Image 1 (cartoon, rainbow, N blue to C red):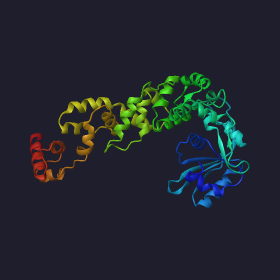
Image 2 (image 1 turned 60 degrees about the horizontal axis):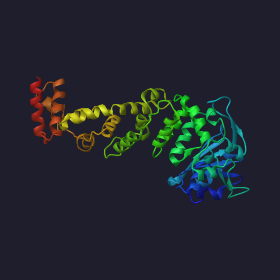
Image 3 (image 1 turned 180 degrees about the vertical axis):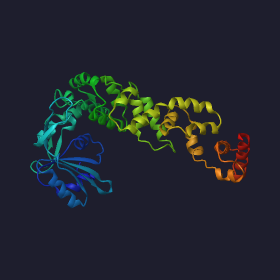
Length: 386
């Protein structure tokens, strides 16, 4: 872990009791490549440490005094640091936001969700270099299980069910039997309208492979989760990676394969993301019409007004002509415009639009490659329209 760029950069500047916690420790113990995000827990004044790091490294510090935390973005993509005051927390009632107050490293680890995320490596101060593992996280890594830190954790914060499924899916782990039993009791009551639950869903959908986590959520009884999303997610990912595909957030496309429409409508996710998923729902119907279209111009007429997500989903549903349209048809430009037709004597009005549409269809079909041919065809169409 000391070889991670972010850790290497900050080590010389640490003072007092500072520990790396959470995922960076878990992944180091698993021998997995370290990510760019590092959480540092400070038993003391985290904001003062963050300010010192910002000055020493020459980077901007974004402080959050209310929570005793700060974030730093290191240059050259070396990493993202969250500097956190060690704290304890309690939940006034299930699903409520936690009430927090300063605490020790042990308090901070005890407030976490699952054991494999409740470990720390001391980077400075007494015990530098020690692994702090009060809840058996290293043992659970060897067992390949995700285990809740304590009984009642899921009822306390239902978003932890989605988080546990995400970690189990990412790591290829199973839920500890007791943890699984508690998750099955809470999952059917998950409310996607909760911002905390919906945010965990978004994070799951952003995983390299969200399918194992989604399948686990469905098995646990989470409402509205499609039971077998693997093929749909894989097809959408392939379609979105096709050259020329519109640049859409992958997680929003995957949302259409993850939740049924009724559940999506309730989800506390950005409206644009729910709209992308709804557009993707139209993909199979659009695919049928594209396959039946025949001529390239007919495909062009279907795809030009189609929402981008619908086109991606149509390709995912097997309409291979979509990829060809992205490569050759979408960016066709006519050598004429309405002013050319007006100068040739066509009166302004609907006839001009129909004439230009006919010229575009001819170009897409390869029947009018130069300006003269396009103008002649458009004028002929305008004459028929007139």
